[in-house]
Length: 488
Ligand SMILES: Cc1ncc(COP(=O)(O)O)c(C=O)c1O
Image (cartoon, rainbow, N blue to C red; front, side):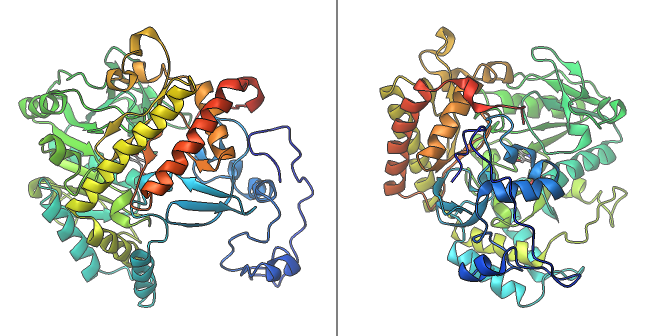
């Protein structure tokens, strides 16, 4: 078995040629191995494939970088990805049979644990009735009602297939509603891969956006302003919308400073701009009412994704009726989607929502605090300067021992410039050491840590024990050995 943290360990370069099958059919990778491992070639789980590297090599030939979301390639932590075969509860297994305790949980899309029986039963039952119709369904009505009844600012909801679609639709809607162009975003917030929101801003000062990635024309971000998080911007009356992660969970975990969300709300009201909360992570994760209930600030529009689909692809925009009815077919702002309001995704979402009650969120908050304390103590005892900030049910990681943050780094990180002082190389070492000790974290220093229903006390203790060993290893390992190739 190759060591995923060692880029020099031998890759099984001899990928067996797939066996020829009649055109148009999905074939066995290897009839003998596939049959022996009971791997069905159509529902391929890769159990018969020899190694993670074998799958990655074959994937790289047909998928750019071998991945369908850039972070999965391990570019910012080095080493080679594990390839997942299956998952259950808090555990995932790669194609080599290695088991990890999973703190990624599909980047927060999964809150009840992988393959929760209620969710899988709902998916199976729904699938038997057909997978997509291109027509209204009662399930999308019920999921919209659930969101309306839980999230006070959402009088109406429109579904789509991803968080990215939700934020791009919300921006178009706000622009169409106000008849203005300028969008204000906060440095270090992430709203998915949508052109207008992929602007890079200089920290510290408000800047007109410049493209944050190749392929985004200057024109797409010319009306995007990027300003520092946790400072209320002064808006002009050209601003259509301010979009904000009410708890920032893509630059480590950064809580809104007291008065920040209220201040942004008041400033939007002053100039008639639409306030958009991007609750793709926080929605139904911090509680049924999301961050807006926790901080008691109502946006005009809210973007959802992840949890509301029970782990299946989904996105949604909710908000005030007057704005929502600007969408087609009632208004002039176009929105459409072949699979929008998909009957399987809405079934999975409803099954998840059925279990997401106040008691469960109290339990998740306790677990997040407990894990933060356990991991923090484990790192401290090994002299590894990692801290694990908590906001409600969400957890982050910050690594650094600078004077500035020596008392409580987590509490004092308030914006992207400070978040960037985390020790990325130390994170990469820690990440790989955690993997070697059986715990999967996200392969990026700025991602959240997701605790869910499946992370029992016993599992939290196992994670803490792994953390202590990993912290010790990370202290002793050289950063040069990781082969880091980029950032994502
Ligand atoms: C806050 C936030 N908004 C939007 C998105 C984009 O969602 P998706 O990946 O479903 O397109 C993400 C993705 O992680 C996110 O964290």
